[in-house]
Image (cartoon, rainbow, N blue to C red; front, side, top):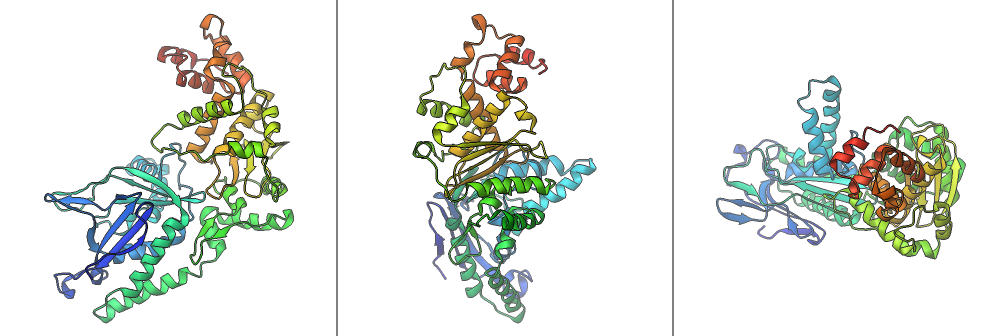
Length: 497
């Protein structure tokens, strides 16, 4: 009873707990969870998130009732490990802890009816992913668990518990980690096994509560794969995917975690359609699935494999800075001079063995589709219906955008199946847009387009057309690379494309 039972590894994710004896008699403790007095320690990347200082003393674990935590993990298991999309449009690209807090604060007191309805959906998402939803009166740290492609994102804030005693202070600083699915799921599963098997009970009512927890935990093991996938995609999309799979011959390629009701590597089709607008017509879904199936069972070139990388991403940094850095590195690796004005994207992609297909979709919302890696031939599908692709310059920008996805946005399973559009992850799309802008229009090349360094409105219009960027996007790019100052930026913002 004195030693913590530890599950996982501190360098990635560890949860440690033990039961403790309450000084109060059972009849003076809370009716539902009073039997579960215990101590809990959570560590991510060697940072102890449960560490706090109280009356001058430092402690690495919180002492509270464990029942709410056990119940919360059991109740929300499939959501925690399979739901990526937020229940609201997110343009920040921030980890769940930050994005959810902003969304709640924006809508919680709004007099607008739309905002009030949005708040309900946001709060429901929060209740599935935020540890504090387990017990609002507890002193747990503000931790969020969320699926991100083939990873689990754990993020946390430094917000103190509302009902903490005086002089109580959690010492954690805001942070986040992207970890392998099994590195989080396995320790949590072992924790739940231990908790449901060793839970102390002193009366019939407590035994009934524990029996219910144990029964629901056992039932989790029988969770159908289809239910797990439907946490990632909508039920409608999942149904259509099953129908289209049969006609396209697409081979399911998801990977289950050993002995756990968790998908460790998502099926490529599910991964591709995870954030898609549910209003898409079946014909467009069929086009994308057919494209995906056509690339399956093939490999990529050695030249492309040499460039592929999963760069570290710092959630608090600006996505455009990451995109710029990656574009500069890519141009260097491909031997493209810093001052080369126009890049032949078709030639670059052909050299890397990336196939390009153009097709007219029913919707204009889809910009492009990218497929690569782990059993797929690399390919880009350009939607000619999209306003982004209504001319050759626009198509060139889309190809550069999709190249970024192929090179740098693969999952831990080393695969990519991605649809670019307004529903896609904000951070991923912002980074790809910045990559395309820098790849096609680096500062050294841009300077050659302006006579005597004068960045006139006419010159901006011409350059925007040549590189396939909107005038507004180009102005922001010029500002980001320090070619114009704040005053010039405001003047150029008045240009109409």
